Length: 584
Image (tube, rainbow, N blue to C red; front, side, top):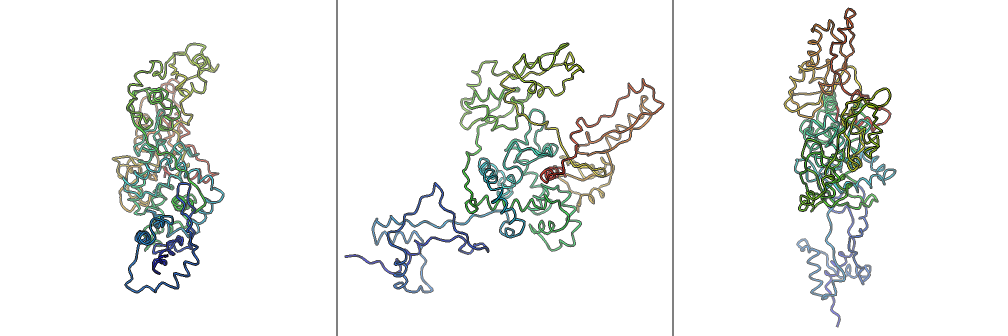
C-alpha cells in the first residue's frame, strides 16, 4: 500500500524544489532581479527530482489548505526531517539547499550604483576592459586577505581593498609617468613622510605589506579631516588641499549635504579635475564587480595567499644565497621582497626578509652551510689610468649596464675612460642578475607652478612653523588650503605661497655677506617639495668681483636632480592622476 503524504508536505516539497530568485526579500535592490550565477566548478550540483514539478504543484494547490494567521513557518531543515519520517532514506536523493545571503559591502555602493558615472564604469569594466579587470582582480586575490585584515585593524572599511585595483591593479611594482610607485602609488616624499624607506637600495613603496599600512594611515587621516570616506578617497587622488578649498568655495551650495553625498555634490561643480571626479565612481564600480564577478560574466581563479616566514639576515646578503638557504628560487624571493632593489640586502643594515612559508626552521643551518663565496655580494676595485667601465665589466662577467647601475656617480673623462682613483663597486654575477631595473627612487615629477609650491607635513610640524619657514602667515596658509582650523597631520600636502623657505634664504644671505661675495643671488622657487632641495638659484656675480674671488666662492646648494621637479606629461589623464595623487 502506498502511503500518501499530507498536502502541506507536498506544498513545502514543491517550494523547496523551485529555485530561489536573486533580489527577493527585504534587502532586495531596487533594480530588476538578476538570475543567480551558474554554479562554479567547486559547487555540488543538485540532482533533478524524479517527480516533475508541474503535477506536484497542481496537486499541492488543490489539496493544501490556505495558511491561517497563526500558521507555523518551517525551515528547510524541518522539511527535510519530516520527509525522512515519511519516505525514509530515499528522500536524500532530493537535497534541499539553504538559501545563501546576498553579498554585502561596508562602503556605500547601492545608493550610487545607478548614477551615470558608476554605470559608465560598470559598462567599461565589463566591456572593453573586461579581460584586464578580470586579470587584475585575480592578481588581487593573492593580497586580499592581508589587505582586508590591515584595513580592519586600522579601523577602515575592508572594501577599500578595491582602491588598490583602481590605483595599480594590485601590482606592487607599478610605476606611473609621474614617478608614483607601488600598489598604492606613493610619491617619494609622501612615502617617506608616511614612514616608508625609499632610497637607492630599498623602496618600501613596492612592499605590499608596508605600503598597505602607509596607505591606511594616510587615508585614515584624510577621513578624519573631511569626515567622509569618499572625500578622503578623492583627496588621496587629487590632494587634500584641493578638496578642502572646494568645500570652502562651495560651502553655501553644499549646506545641508553630508556624508558620502558631499563628494557627489562637489563633483557636480566645475572644480575637481576629471581624474578626481571619476575616481570614486571607479572605486564603486570596482567594488560592485569584485564582490559579484559571476554576475558580470567574470570568472576569478583565486591565487595562493601572500603568506611567508620572516628571517633576519646580515648586511650585503645576496638574494641568491637567501633563495638557496630557503629552498626557493630567486624569483620567489624577489616576489616576496619587491622592495629590495639591487639583488642584495643593503650594505650597512641587517634586515628582515621574507621566505616561503614553512622554510624558517631550516634556514639558519642551510645558510651557514653555504660556501663563503656564495654569501659575498660585491667587491671593490680602484679605477686606473686608461681603464673603462667596459673593461671592468668584462673582467667580472657583468654587463656595462649592470655595473653602471651600481655606480651611478662615477666620473668619466672626455676619452670615455674612468677618471683614475675612483672606487668601483662590482656586484657578483648572481647579485647583478637579481637586481631590479628600476628608475632612481629619488625621482619625483610634479606639475610646475610659478606662484605656489607644495610642502608635505612632517611629524612634529605645526602650521605656524611651516608658515614661518615659507615667509608667510598661518592665515594665508589656511586660506590657500581651505582649512577652517589650524590643524594638520603628517603626510598632509599643503599649498605654500610666498617663495622659498627661510632656512635656505638665510643661508644664502649669510653667504652673500662673506668676504668672497658682494651680491645676493636672486631666488626662483620651482617646486618646494622639500625645503632643503626646493630652491634653484638664478643669480649673477657682481661685475666688480675678481676671477680669484669667483673661484673661491661657494655656490649655494641647489637640488641635486633637476628631474625631481620636471613637469609631468599632460597628454594622458592617467599621468595627471598620478601627479596629483599624493603630491597635492
